[in-house]
Amino acid sequence: MAPPKRKVNAVEDAAAPPAKRRRRSTLNENSKKVIEQTAASSRPSRISLAAANTPRSLRSSTDGAITPTSTTKKGTKTPINGSATKSTTKISSAKGRKKGKKAVKATSSQGDENPVANVRYQANLSIDVPTQSGPEVAEEPEEKHPEAPSYWLMKAEPDSRVEKGKDIKFSIDDLKAATAPEGWDGVRNYVARNNMRLRMKGDMAFFYHSNCKVPGIAGIMEIVQEHSVDESAFDPEHPYYDEKSDREKPKWCLVHVEFRQKFVEIIKLKELQRNAKEGGVLENMQVLKQSRLSVSKVTKEEWIFITSLVDVEEVATDSVQHQPQIAA
DNA sequence: GCCAACGTTGGC
DNA sequence: GCCAACGTTGGC
Image (cartoon, rainbow, N blue to C red; front, side, top):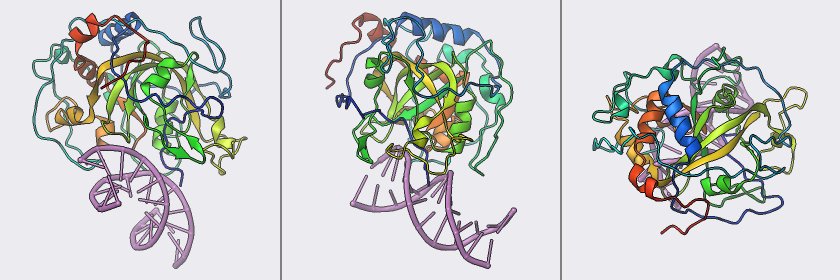
């Protein structure tokens, strides 16, 4: 039944302009800071479920300029961590073709000459990847250390697709255009949900474009609000309505995110897969092993490595921001 | 609780 | 559009 859904665009009112893929972007100061910050810290992310069950409608603002319902535009782009030079660690060999490649072994290794990859990260490795199993898998996440952020990868479909009369399209540009924290609703998969429950304000996440021409990581966002009840599950009109979800005992939750940066070039799935070969930095990356997971974990090592793939130079010279430029 | 059938995801 | 992977359901 309810398959792992993705971000659903609230098209009810303003059917978001089918902003298709664009190109351009830079990394904003904020993100830069975050990246450096996260790169410097380390902690096994163990989280606690604590959390506020806040209706989706309850949108909060994290820093000024936020209006109810929409989003917040942030970002002034700037290059990522200086040390994060572009290094693509070309390891040819497309790892698996069909989606959920039953990926490789275990043993995370470093990313070769990638300066960033030389750092030893242990990050979230302490968390076991939740495997598909009963509905109530890992119901209660463990404790989380509040000092450092955890990293995630969340999928959304950038191309229009109508479900129950509503376009569920949601791209990095849509998020960028939002003026208020965006509730990432529609997740209807237990493993993904459990991952969601592990999130905390301050955690960072990759925005992944899926089910599109060039799937891959399009940018970065930040979790700005603890998880709360996903109200869309109770709305019969909503694409992701779940008749089995009881309001008294909500099954699904969401987190609110804010745009942080859009990569100049999308980091293609293919590239991620190239680095997921045995011995590759991404060999254990959850999303590459469980491709159908709409919300997955990213270890710090993976995070650092992936952000290092961003073309820093290009980003650095591109100071323009926010304007939606036509891609291609 | 096992497991086959079925349905969905999502890369290609 | 195809189809592998895999989550969910439901019979037993």
